[in-house]
Image (cartoon, rainbow, N blue to C red; front, side, top):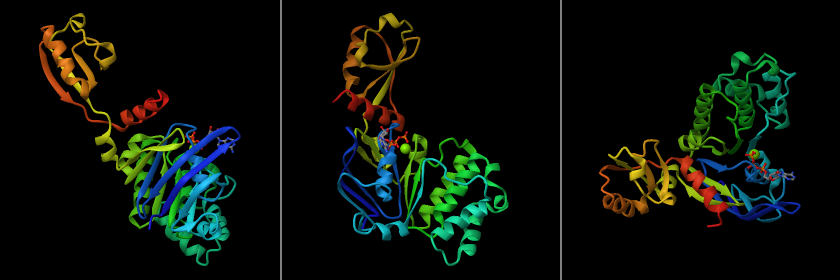
Length: 302
Ligand SMILES: Nc1ncnc2c1ncn2[C@@H]1O[C@H](COP(=O)(O)OP(=O)(O)OP(=O)(O)O)[C@@H](O)[C@H]1O
Ligand SMILES: [Mg+2]
């Protein structure tokens, strides 16, 4: 059984159709990352999956339970770390945790708070007012709140936005630990390196649909590939490769990145012009390139 299944989900706000035909399955016990440009509908989907808002159409199941009939049961088994931190600055970390523990009707609130605080290295800050916490500490406390009640699925909507690199790495370790303890993590992020490092599977949301899905390696492997052609000629005017074939070039005109499919034709042109080819090097695909290609392809309507 998958942790989350989404079938043909649609959601509009007035005339603005945000989710057009969303299909997705998230496996149990994995980190799934949803990527998409600002405004592509990531938080809209999270709101639907966490029973905060209703889809206009389609089916959603959480741990095999239909969201329409079992919303109460689902809420007991999930937690949401929303995009905007929702801590109360006037209360201490401990008091913030206690409020959630009480809302969740936890029997062993104190023990659970103690264990989770130790796990997330929060113990020494617990009696300070949250208003005095740094951004990274707030995020950590926010995640601690999500873990109270031992939910099966933890939704983290951009948990590392605005967090410095050192604290980001700490949060990554926490997120991996949550997954390693058998939980399912549904993550959104603005950072492609984060998605690359953390995800078991990831999906790109574009124009209301998942347009690419796979492991980070699968996605990089299946993406459009590029090669770098290095020539010995230092004079850019000597190289007459068609502009539309050049993805990028260096200032000296001695190094060109082209689509792998155009390698042969570019080499022929260079040979005909007596340009001496120094090397042809396949490029490692980065998720950045995949992301830009996905969004570019769609905006061009191809
Ligand atoms: N309650 C609402 N009423 C009207 N429009 C909304 C509402 N919620 C979201 N939208 C619109 O839906 C679109 C998707 O918003 P959403 O917040 O889901 O995007 P996102 O992918 O989470 O963006 P970001 O990366 O900035 O967090 C946006 O154009 C947004 O303005
Ligand atoms: Mg969002």
